[in-house]
Image (cartoon, one colour):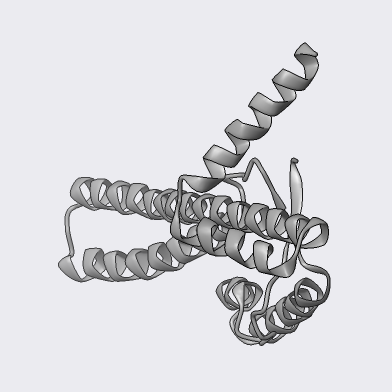
Length: 181
């Protein structure tokens, strides 16, 4: 079970991750293009489900968004710092040190932004996979038993967080017992 389909019900809109990425890359045209690309993705996910992986990657759209946001912060910070250096009329050596510090801070903000975004995205992808796993189990139970049992299982999974682990352990035990026969 490495990839599953997650059923989504988010209403497709131009206000989405691709719009944010487009805005951070090219404010006017990127916003429009990214918004429509994201809306198309959302429509497809609503119709066919979103493919989610058991092993989410740190390298995801949230990493890109975080890095681009860090880049934007760095850009503003560098502009302000350069203006301050110019206005302060520092001697060349302190001005160079200040410029080096600004450069390091700029790179650091991009790296920190990407790291925070990547970790947040990785966490979100793990949660989406767990939700897809629940949906798959409930769907399978609904096909093989009554809808009432499927609803009861869904309720139990939602309110007992350890339930999924117990089901997995029970399956492994049953498989081991079956092999022993």
